[in-house]
Amino acid sequence: MTKILAITNQKGGVGKTTTSVNLAASLANAGKRVLLIDLDPQANATMGSGTNKQVIQQTIYQVLLGELPIKSVRISELQGKYDLIPANRDLAGAEVEMVTLSQREIRLKAALVEIIEEYQYIIIDCPPALNLLTLNALCAAHAVMIPMQCEYYALEGLSDLVNTIKKVRANFNPRLRIEGLLRTMFDPRNILAQQVSDQLQRHFGDKVYRTVIPRNVRLAEAPGFGLPVLYHDRQSKGAQAYLELAQEVLKA
Image (cartoon, rainbow, N blue to C red; front, side):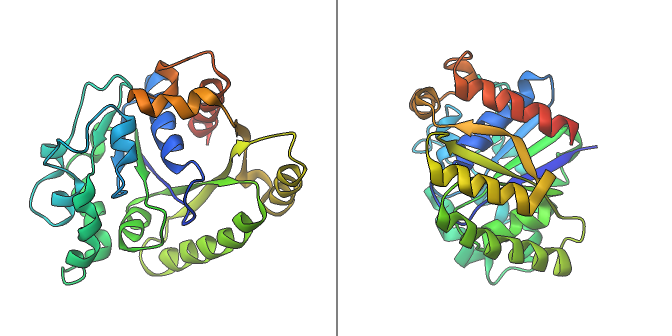
């Protein structure tokens, strides 16, 4: 059975795209059939997968508007060994254009019917906002992964996101659940980071992944080469952390 995992947090700069790209590559490395969907108008997951967002014409934008089937925009044979549904700046206009469309909240879910059985894992990289694009991801997903930095404001934003997920579960997608909270860009020397990490573990218990993603130069470099870190420097701490996270996801 296919598992659809939305990677979301309305706060920007917490490692959503880094996690989406590198988790997709790590699951593919484990022999799984994986699809990565870039649902962020910034299209960083597209670029980080080695596809130039300036050049591609057919993206998730046309799929959401019902202009193209999802199969026709899929990109295969990436170095990361997963398939990609790309995005570009056009996606920024999709939210306005979708307002008048029927079933606007479940257009991604409906589009995925065509290809869902071809994959074991579908990863959705969400935009840093609780908007209609994110709502489409939450309506299509089985579970949510929340990357977050261990800092004070992260805890405030987390409660808003948890409330949104509860509303989506009540109104659109009763099977949706929070699979886990992922601590990213973690510096163990930072006392506040340790304190927030402890708070998360006390409050959410086993919903907090055991894997912690460290601050790592190789992780930051890899997108510039259009590669998951696994294919930039497999021995780096960042690559090893995402390989460990993939094993947790596989066991979930």
